[in-house]
Amino acid sequence: WVLKELTESTEEEFKEAELTVAARKKTSIKEGSKALYEQAVAAVAEGKNEDAIALSLRALRAVDAEEDAKEQNEEHDEEEDDGRHPNPIRLLIFATLSEASMNLQAYRCAIRDCELITKVYGAPNQALATLDADHVMAYFKAMFRYAQCNEKLGDLERASAGYLKILILDIMAEEGLGFEDGKKIDNEFCKEICQKAADALKGMNQNPNEVTVYRLKVTLLGLEPPVWRTIEVTSDHTLSELREFIVLAMGWSGTEEPGSQEFEVYDHGIVRFAEIPNDLFDEEEYEDRLDACEDESDIYLSSVVSAVGDSFAFMYEKGTWAHQIVVEEVRKEVIEGCSHDHENGEEHDHDHEHEHEESKYPQVVAGARASPPEDIGGPAGYQEFLRTVTDRLPSTKWSSRTAALEYASENIGLTNTALETWGGGSTQLPSYITDMVKGLEDEEVVETIEAGPRDPEIGGWDPEAFDLTKVNSTLKAIAAMMEVNSEDEWEDEDDEDDDDDEDDVKDEDKE
Image (cartoon, rainbow, N blue to C red; front, top):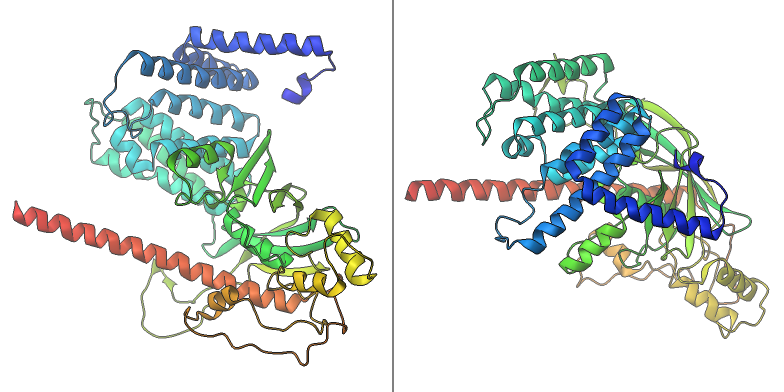
C-alpha cells in the first residue's frame, strides 16, 4: 500500500512531506500510545487494515517516547528495570499489527510480528506466569495467528507446533490458573481457542514424517557465463544452516569473519539476516548488530520463502559477491523411519539396532562452473585473474601466472575443483578442514598426499570445473557433523538442568 501511494514529486514536495512525517511523530507522542492503539483496534474492526498498521507503528513510536521521558524524569532501580518485564502495551500493539498484516495476506510480516512477541514476552509458560489475563488472551490470539499464517504458507510443521502451544491453555484452565493481580483467565476464551487449535490440527492431518522440500537455484551475479548451483533443502533448515550449505556448494572457503556474510530478504523493505555471535562483541556492539540485522540462526527457511518464484539474496565478502536465490520447486515428501517406532500412535523405545532412512537433504542436484578464489576483488578482479592465468597477460596484482595460481590454491574452498589439473600444487587439504571432517587432534600431523611431481606449467585454472559427486559427499559430511553438534548442545543443556536440579535438592535438604 506504500507503493500505490508513491507519486512523482519535486525536491520541494519531498521536503514538505518529510516535515509532515516529523509532525506526525510529534503528534503520536502527544496522542499517547494507548489512544493510538485503540484507534488501530477500531481500524481493524472496520476493515481498514492499512490504517491500522500505520496507527500501530505510530503507537510503537509513542511507547518509545513515553519510556524515554519516564527514564529522564525518574530514577529507576536497576533490578526492577532490567528488561525482564517489558511494557505490556507493546504486546497489544504487535498483536494488532499481526492481525492487520494477516488480513492483508502479508503472512510473513504477521509471522515476524508474532515471533517478536515470543522473543520479548517469552514462551507460553513464561507469558502465563508474568502477564495478566487480558494480555495473556492477546498473546495466545497472536500465537493462533502465527500458526494460521504458517499453514497458509504451507509450513505445516511450524503450524502444528504453533497450534500445540495453544493447547497448554486447556490444561491450565482446568487447574484454575491464577495471576499476580488475582484475576482468572476466561474459561470460555480457553475453550474456544483450544477447540479451534484442536480442529485445525485434526484438519491438517499431517504425517509426522512429512517434510517440505525447497529446490533453490543459487546464481553468483556479475559473471558470464554464470556460476550456479541448484540445491534442495527442507523447511526445518535455518538460514544459518543454509549459509553453510551454499558456501560449501559454491566452493567458497567460508573463513570470512562473522558479519561478512548475510542474507537480504525483500519483504516490505530489506530485512537482513546474519550470524551474530554474542561472544565476539561487547554488549553495545551486540545491540548495534541486532539493530542492523536479525539473527540468522533464529529464522527458518519457511519464514523467508513459500512459493515458486520467491527470491532473496546471499551476500558474501561484505557484499563483494551477491548470490541470487530463487525458489524453483516446493514439494512435500515423506521420509520414513523405523516402521515400529510409532505403534498405535505411541512412541516406543527398543534396544535392537536398525537403520533409519538417511535424509538426503541437503543435496545439490545440478550446477556449473567454479567459483572464483576468495578476496579476488569481485567480478573485475576475477576477470584480471583469468587474463593472467589463461592468457598469460601481465598484471599489477601478480608477478607471474604461477604466483596467481599459487594465490588461488590458498584461497579456494574444499569443493572447488578448478585447480585439479594444475601440476604446481598438491592435493593436501587445509588443516582446519581435515581436522573438522576427520576429527583429528591439533597435535596430529596431517599426511601430505602429492598428486605427482610438481610442474607449474602443467594445467592451470579451469573455470568450467564442477564435481557434483565431490560437492554432495562433502555436504553430507558437514551436514551430519552439524547435526551431531546440535545434539551435543541439547545434551549439554540437559546435563546443566540436571546439575541445577541436584543443587536445588541439596539446598532443600539443608533447609
